[in-house]
Amino acid sequence: MNSFNQYICSLFGGIKTLLIGMKTTITVFFRKKTTEQYPENRATLQMFDRFRGALVMPHDENNQHKCVACGLCQMACPNDTINITSEMVTDEEGKKRKVLVNYQYDLGSCIFCQLCVNACPHDAIKFENTFEYAVFTRSKLVQKLNNEGSTVVKK
Image (tube, rainbow, N blue to C red; front, side, top):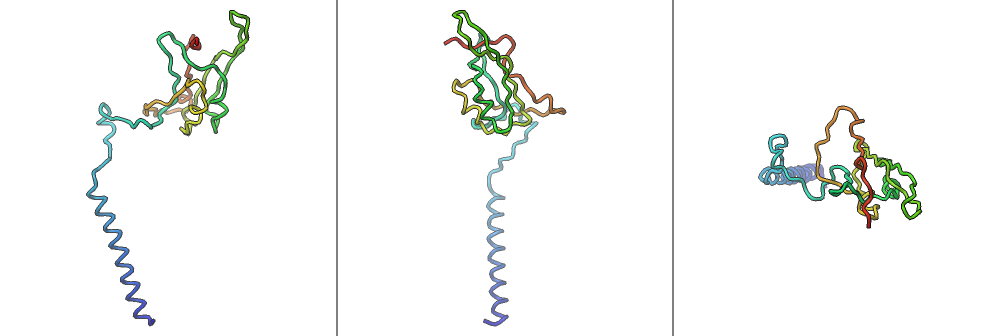
């Protein structure tokens, strides 16, 4: 094959790849737009059900939660986002048990992997769909998830 034939083959190969790229560009251009005008449509914006915004510990109307301070979520967290403080207390029957004192969660270092939620045997924590957490200092991203005076739900 001489150099002229190689030149023609490479020219047609280049034109072919150019047309493939143009076809892709044109199909994307006429596709339905998915861009959200965020600040303007804040009232109507719906997040997907699978979106992981921030970790929360749901409390019921009696200020009770399901966390028994077992620490499995803290051990499952790959970058130490969760810090659980607990203490041993003696109940009315004389049995010692762990009680949650402080459940601290650092939203700034969370990678939203959901390993903590999957590790929790009591479904005490979950991710919610809120997403507006812009702050000027990282210390404001450290949250206490258990309410003051909250107790564990009696089974």
